[in-house]
Image (cartoon, rainbow, N blue to C red):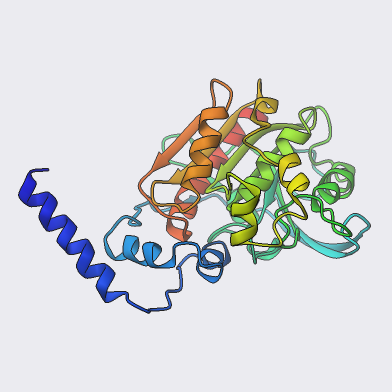
Length: 309
């Protein structure tokens, strides 16, 4: 870019910034994106990125096989101290009772088991056809209510314990992820962080992990300023710091995707530097929003399927 072009670009961004003065911006892309606005994490910058094209992400149209059944229900979680909902999507040609590998899909902040994926149901997710590769290998996908506590233990609410001690054993009793079938973790935003945390804490249980736009802070003070309920204490943050404990992922397939204009980029960059060799890192144009997240769901599912199915 020559000097005149740089000056034109700078002038254009200044005009865009001026046009945003005092505007309350709602981030497109669901609850995961809305958190950034509601918590005042660079709201003006997020709007500027959208107007300036930094968030423009294109994706090929999705193709699906005939959707398998989807089963939903509830159970009382002693770990969370409440009733939680869940949903299980089965791949084409399969039904409840079949033994299959399992993907545990973790939702973002403000979401629940009903909208853990962006633009997909659990049954659609495992019915995806991958361009050039055809139908995903058969695997089931489960979503569950994890609350807003960033999937780490809080006094009286332990969503991580719910996953390990209640949800996954329940699925295994149904034939899903029961050895020798394997289990993978996947998540978006807060759930992307949670998927990494689950994989780090449970190396013998989680065989592969994919995190899309993971919400990762680099310090407890930073996390507390953005979301006071994310961690119960500084000690809880240290125990759940997926960057510090990234070496625990050694020897397992890891995929991380994030946008260049994602406000969590500093945390993701720190994670990428700490990841073991061989991790797949997809950092590209995009923001912390629905278009970027939905564009990364198919390759993340394909990645997990290639390692557990």
